[in-house]
Length: 113
Image 1 (cartoon, rainbow, N blue to C red):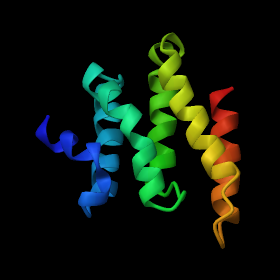
Image 2: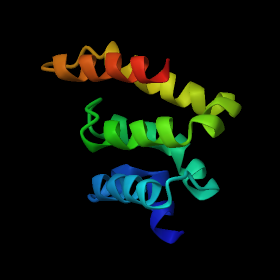
Image 3: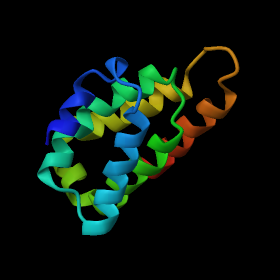
Image 4: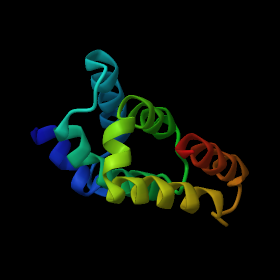
């Protein structure tokens, strides 16, 4: 999908959060994570980085990936690494005023297990 190709570099767009919400909506509507969405999944850390390690709507979307796409996630080591790295990045962020993001990182680690 051309819209999702914009996620290759979310720093060039201002509506990356809207795309994150579209991802969540697609997962909820189909009650499944399509192969196309799994292709976008490894690009989500760039959204986290752009947002200065603040998850915002990304945490809820990741939750849907983890719960609804659990079997596919467990079958792909790279996707597990993406989630673990995002959780680690947020949990150990030292940016000013990032306490809530540190907590979101801890929540994400709990969701993984």
